[in-house]
Every structure is written in C-alpha cells, then in structure tokens.
Image (cartoon, rainbow, N blue to C red; front, side):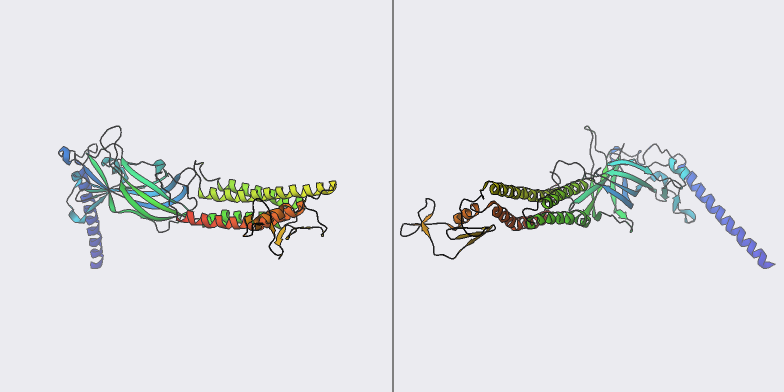
Length: 440
C-alpha cells in the first residue's frame, strides 16, 4: 500500500514539475514579447553611429544537383543560417531554460534581417512536411534563424579550356533594404560546410573562398553584402573517352586510303566520305550541350584539326585520282605522261644516273657528273655540278602519272602521321599548362 502511494506521489510531482516548466517558458515568451515591435531593428534606440546590427552568416550545402554550361547556372539545396543580437529579447535563464525554440506560429513576431541571393535565378523554401525554418532565442538576446532553400543560381563560365577548365561559381547574400549604417554582414568561422555524400559527376569542389561585396546603387549608401566562391575543377576523362579517342581513331581510319591501290576509287571514296561525315556528326554532338560563345574552346581546336586532317586526306585522294585519270587518257592517246622515253621495263624511268621506280626516287652509285647548267654549283675546274635536289625533282616530274600517284601516297603515309603527332604534343602541352585570364 505504501509503495502505491509513493508511485502516485512521484507521478504527481513529475507532472507538477513539467507544468511548472511549461508555465515558466510561457511566462518568458510573454515577457520578452511584451512591448516588442518587430517593425524596428534591434538597435534603433542607439545613436546613429551605433545602430549597426552585426549579422553573422554561414551556409550548409545539402546537395549540388547539376551544373549547366549551356545556361551557365548551377542548382543546389542549401541551409542559410543567420545570427544576430537583439537586446530586447534577453531573459533570465531560470529553471535551466537557456534557449527558447520558437514554434512556427511565433516566427512572424520576431524581427529578422532581409538578405537575398544576388545571383539567384529562382528558388523556394521547403515546406514538406512543415516549413523548414527555425528561430532560437538565447538568454543573452542572441537570435539564430535558419531556413532551407533550393534554387538555381547564375554562374558565368569561361570555356576557353573546355573540357580542361576550372570554373568559379559565386553565391552572394546582400541586404535588400538596409544600408551599412544599420546592418553589416560577416561570415562566421565555419562559413561554408557541406554534406559528406555530395558527389558531382563532372566537377570536383576543390576549395571555397569568402569575400566582401558591399556595393552602392545610383549614388546611394553601400548595402551590406558577403559572398563565397566555389572553385570547381572539371573531370575531363569522360570527354577523353567519348570525344578525343574516337576522333583520333577516325583520323587514323582516314589514313587507310594511303595504303590502298591508287585505282581503288570506290573504296577510297567510301572511306574518305564516311570519315568526314562521322567527324562532322561527332563535332555537332560535342557542341550540343555548350553555349554558343564567340571564342574558340579547346575541344573546338582539336575537332577542327582532326576534321582538317581527314579533309586533307580526301584532297590527297583527289590529286591521286587526277593523276590516274591522266594516265589512262595518255595511254588511250598513246602518251604516257613522261617527258623522257626509255626502253626499260614499264614502271621504271631512268634519267642520267637517277632511278625512278614506281614513285620511289633512287640514285645509282655513279661517278659525279658535271654539266654546264645555269643554276648549278661551280667546281674548281670551272664546270658545274648538278644539285641532288634538282635531280630528285627532275626524276619526279619525269615519272609516269601512275608513278607520281604512288609517290604522293608514300609521302602522305609519313607526312600526315608526323604532322598529327606534332599537333597532339603541342595541343596537350599547351592546354594542360595554360591558365586563361578570366577578366579578359
């Protein structure tokens, strides 16, 4: 029986204590809001030089959903926290109550600063399942306000190095109606923090930098403003796999023409046209998600040069085809296309110690021949010696048209790859080491 009475007494005392605590909190709220005017800032009763309210800000990044280069914007979900001191809301921390966590119904009764996001395109507060806002009031008059915002924000991008670029996106908070005379924004020590599970597909967030951005409009006083720069480094491996390697393979495929027979016209036309169209389609696809800027991007340079090499291979085939057709016309009319006739086997032409075999220029081992020509080098005995380069060109022009065509193919087999390798070395070295000037 005594045990039952003790339990009843303990329950009664606990309920009395809870009721007393609720009564105390209710009394504190009534006392601090008695005579409180939310239309006036906290330090309105101070002298003009002392009315400035110091508002400490910090941002928590829940997620960065996407970064759109075409629209030059990024979307994110953030938590904005503001903290300031309002001496009118001080209270005695009695009965262990050091902080008041206000309910939603009382939010409209408290004065709050008026920051807005300068580079905002569109945004909204979260209201599911309840408005994602809170106001805490501490016993010394410190007020903390937090609100979750999801929005799309403008981010100017400089794409000269795309896809090896680094972008800087800003987030600026500025007072809409208060000047520096009555309000000042500062970043807290932990100005920007982020969730651990943030993962960007195309970028990596390297670091964050804070700055002040107070500004005046039309000659008025300056308005308080603070901002952060988010430094983003693009992950370019996707573009290497999806754009650069296929472009390289397409260029290599276009060079197969140089190893085909000069008379294989259908095969060479098919490869040339196919590679040109494929390269054009790939170029269009690479630019589909990019803005139409007035400067040249890194990916534009590479794709344009690849297209130029492929088109150059097509022009090389056109030259070879013209030579082959001239050869056929010459045979039909009894003219072989050579300036020097010889009784040697078909396909070879000899000219004074030079052997031209199927487009290959060779010099036979003969004693040095001295002739009297106007543009040769003079020897000690007054005679002239023929220059090897002149004899080489003489040999080329005395080849049959078919031999010239094969000779052009053999030169292209070395010339095109050599130039393309040199271009790639210069391209990758330049764009991986160059940093563009964003201001220009």
